[in-house]
Amino acid sequence: MSDPPAASPTLARTALHAFHLRHAAHLVPFAGWEMPLYYTSILAEHRAVRSTVGLFDVSHMGILTVDGAQASDLLGRRTTANVERLAPGQVRYTFLLEASGHIVDDLLVSRIDTGEELARRFVVVPNAARTAEVEEILRQHRGPAVEIARWNPKVALLAVQGPGSRRLLEQRFGWELSHLGFYRTAFFPKGRSTPPSAGELGPRLPSGLATSYLVSRTGYTGELGYELFLPSEEADAVAESLVAEGAVPTGLGARDTLRLEKGYLLSGQEFHRDRSPLEAGQERFVEFDHPFVGRAALEKERTEGPPSRLVGLLVEEAGAIPRHGSAVYSEGKRLTEATSGGLSPGLGKGVALAYLPRELARAGTELGVELRGRQVPARVVDLPFVRAAPTRG
Amino acid sequence: METGKIPPELKYTKSHEWVKIEGSIATVGITDHAQSELTDIVFVDLPSAGKSFDAGASVAVLESVKTVADVYAPASCRVTEANPELKTHPEYVNQDPYGKGWLFRCELTGDLTAVLIGPDDYKRLVESPA
Image (cartoon, rainbow over the protein chains, first blue to last red):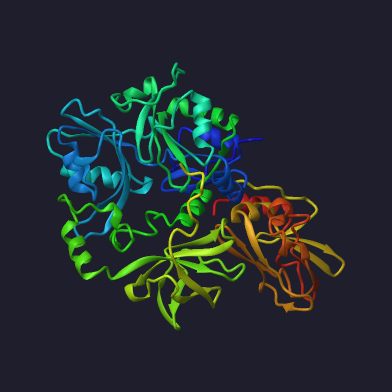
């Protein structure tokens, strides 16, 4: 079999490009990268993540480090997280806002220093399409004691997600992962040790990756899962060894159906410098106890109530699948468009996300979604569409 | 661009249908390339037998995980049969687009020659950048 030609010479390729070709990936352009949409089938890959283990290449995501004595001050001022309060090894899902309160991007901020020195070290992961912008904003606001660097493509990022992910990683690397809590991160040695390593802080990114991998218990699937930062030159061999242990290569198609079922936001769809975290139903990730860009706007919105709220829509009719951009109606009046839509493989039904006026944003509200020129009944439901699996520890 | 399988004995359309002609009856499906672009097909809306369509009209609708696509009549025709298996097994269109995944048969009432292309031309069409 010959390699298919690149979709476009201008697309960037991750360290796993050869892996994708070897596993017959259907490659598509995504945020300037050539990425796998699926390998064998979106549905099969979705089910693998829900029932066993899936392996994602997410090396297109931005990998930034923000280091220095004022690093937590900078990140705190520019995100909705009170970063000063993050404990060593803690990871936070947060938002970088405009002064208007609108979301520029959602980020994972991980603190990887031990706290023994004054200087703080963070790993910041923005969305692929927003990384340059996020890096630029952080640079503009940084003080003299902050160093910012981007590590793509030197560092690769793999997501290992699904109920079997912990056992698979422990078997493959000889680690002890049960002490790594939800939204915690640590370095784990590449070589096996006795007793098995339970992770440590202290190494830096990327120099620490010479002897360990940075492992975070995070993901975008709603399942037990981990994300591994590793040197790009080792990514292919590690990915193949995980597949040999039973991980199923999984593409962006399943990544989208998995996150949609959980009601997770997708950059560029649920927000695009036009929505606040309160409208998006993310107030639990906004810490009002510290100053940050956008705080005044959010406080006003919190007092007055956001003009609209993101809700889940469920379509019962078989074969009726709402899509990104599908028009949403209430009593015959066009309200808005769905920001995301698709089939929920878990429910076997069409689902969508949409911003509704506050008075309609209640579970049980009956609406219509325009599909192929016809209004199909849809109902507002609580998110997530699919509840957490009992295997999630 | 991946071309997928393109059986030499079939005719093709620029809208990625394949057509097999036996006398005045045409069997229509979508190509391997088309199914791989659509991703997993989860619902197939097929016409009932006896329904007539003008050339270029939408005859069937395929809903996939990623998108929705129309299947067009290659010529004016009257549907004689739709694949009864696809209601419960839409995945046949992905797994076997030229076999178990056929969509419908129709009796041709108009001229086909203007719209159909051969396998070599179809391969060039798929390989050329969109």
